[in-house]
Length: 397
Image (cartoon, rainbow, N blue to C red; front, side, top):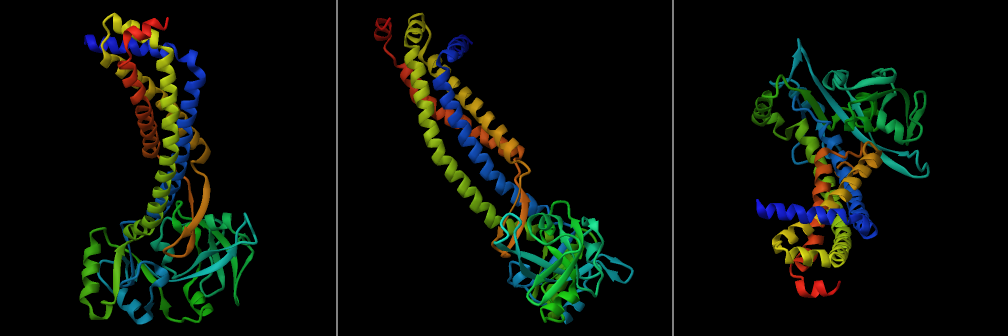
């Protein structure tokens, strides 16, 4: 307890002298805040993208595609196989009607609102009439549902916000195909909001691929029904060329490559900036120790031990780091949380709209990063303060 009282006493002395060193302290705080702003903002891209992808999947649904493929775009299932799959056990039914949608998935190019001269890939999905029963989270926010058997489409809200010519009443043109926009839908912020939906047979006809599908989405009787469905598909010789995954696992896998790239980039940039911030903290604390050499020497002469001096200097540096980290994390939250953007999903080669997401975990990680910078920056000055010769410091009066 005596050692602790000494440490607290020296720490309070250090903190009371900060106003006299406000300039150098501000340099350290601003440097650390800058590191945390960049760190948190970059990683919020990863968190937002992962949240959009993972939030799109449900454990109560399963997606069936061709074996050995990673995305719907590279999958293909013919009509006879689809009819067999619809009879599989484990799929939710309402009488004789199965909760399933065999989808045709394609990519079209549309101009962006931010730069109309630039085009980007947008997914267009043909669904069956039961498609909205399977995707219960989808709801129309403007216009009406498209009519099956027609060249009408409904557009996801995120796609509507990002691309030109997707208002209700507009015509979407891709090659020789023409689709009239009749509605705009939302899907709880999921990746479906970056798609355009229409009748599956009309889309197949437009691409001259009759009776061809990319995937089939089914609602399970219960989450435990997945294993029963999987075993049945593997055991049936006519469906051994397809594979089934939980929808939640499929979309989580879609986000892995992008989040890994962004996280690597974020940590790399933050580490390089942190090196500069550490030197700023070192200079700040060396200045603090030099300006208080007389006080430190006097305390040592009065019997304060070296460990208390080391801990107090380190604590001051960590406090400066905490202040800078808090400022940086709050600034990143206010500036970036909820910011809407889009990026290429390199697995499906299409745009995915999402919002930056500054999560509590990311906020805490940024703060820990700042504390680490403060600790490293204060370590050498703290050791120097503890080893400062008392007689030489007192002669500097």
